[in-house]
Image (tube, rainbow, N blue to C red):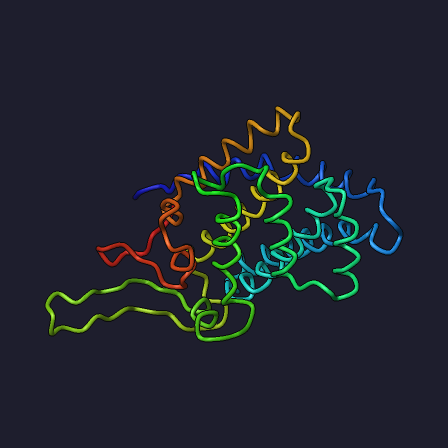
Length: 256
């Protein structure tokens, strides 16, 4: 019987996430902005922590669609945290516009792309940071609403049988029941949570480049994530990586 090895990215995330959380929490509590928006980045940080707590529990219990829908809600919150950390002279004004509902999430990311992200360097591989963030956000955008794609995360795929000849039909063995735990789906959602930690770590380091200890750990984490079989290089369509059903050519589901 084969024993599954714990992915390196998982081990590194377990080490990095508490350090990132501690640093960002302290920074959020010490923000010097007008009272109207002073607490916004701190609330966004709390929102992410609570959302991931709920998503992790749902994921362990086999409620993968619910976990993914919850995880999707973290994307916009990251931008608010970033405004609290980045140190840009206009960050407070942008937060005020966001607070007044004058900026959509997309326009806020566009502002970050134009004014903050150019100093970040490359993303997970060699692509510009804005490309990485666009793909990262777009990968789970379809799961903002309940539709066919999200519903497929409620199913457990046991095996896929491809067509052997042009005239033959493909078929799959799928389990359909409440909380149908799928180890592959659980791993892939956990990978997305690791990507969230990586992004927050990179945002922190962009504002605190002298934090050498964390920088080394985040570099290791990024390298490990980049080697994942679910994220096989910057030329991959990220949307496909977060399709509900993924399998090997042999028909077996992929497990890391």
